Image 1 (tube, rainbow, N blue to C red):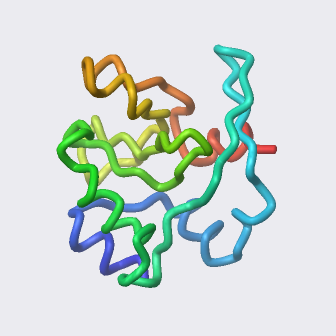
Image 2: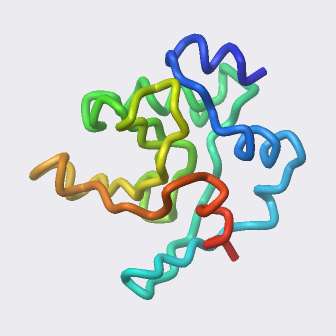
Length: 130
């Protein structure tokens, strides 16, 4: 299921992410605590790894908004404000990505200013979920 996504996007998805998705653990988490801002962000949905016809299939979301995203960002969750939680492969697509918040509105002005660090790894990200 996810191997095809890795091949298409030339990335390595974090093992913890794949395991959480396969075990349906995401249904338990819909809120993200941003410690720097002391803010809670509602996660509306996580991108699908299975249904290629789904508009929220990870590859489809990436392709649809690729012109707005920086090269090494891959969205995996959509917030209630239609922003993204993304894997950030700044160290290379074969390495463990960090997790960032991508503000779609801010990207219209400056894509670099639209990225906010959340966690160094997916495991750290999970600890911020409620």
